[in-house]
Length: 356
Image (cartoon, rainbow, N blue to C red):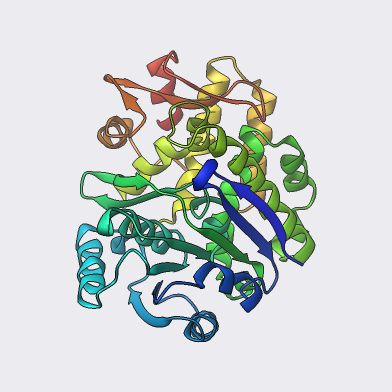
């Protein structure tokens, strides 16, 4: 039996289903029923068995099309966006049709932005298949593509019609990808959910061995935390900013690497450690708390080395961050463990110290 959550407000409210084998007729048919055509957007890394399962369910009720994009951040581009739009036009998609994002965060971000822009908005459904997308990008309605100047600089807030999180898809995920997803789970524990943080600290081996009950619990707790925040602040004008803990420096690191050879979660882990160090230098958390955070990230096998970076190299990416307002950088810091805040009153010297 899938666990159920909701996010969004009013007509934008949508259901999130979490559970093993939740990609089923029972859960998907109510979302696609009434739509004449369905476009499944997926990528080359998604197992064919998962794609086929979705196609079989959809084909009984709609005419199904499929687009497979190359795996990786490079597909979150203006070119891929244009290619998908051209495909929709060629197949005569209209507002009565639907898009399904079947894959990781790249697929969800791209498909969601396409859905928001095509004909000024057509419905889309999220079926995330990686831990990172299941606990983060599939919920909250943030869609985007990358441009050469930075990550996620072109996008829209656009809620899905529904989200189906099938935890059985994680069994086919490479260990490196699964670990990268855990970075976002740790983020929820550090910014707000103390109970989740305790589970992460005390159940490391069971989580890394994909214990079904625990995996479902950490996904549920992560999404419950996020949905609570985004429902209060759908357009990131206030509290939602705390979801960016570790992301300002994490995105800068990704940009420095040209989005190659480092996974999003791996960069965010480094960014969270840097943000925790700033919090410590600012006197907002103790040295002991900082070291506990560092140990937790190390226990989950994240590479936390920052010696390869210089502040001068990351600074251009940091200053192009979406959290820069009126020339002032807002950072998400910890005012105590499990209590994040967004602030622009930090000492810039401490930002430099966190990197060098």
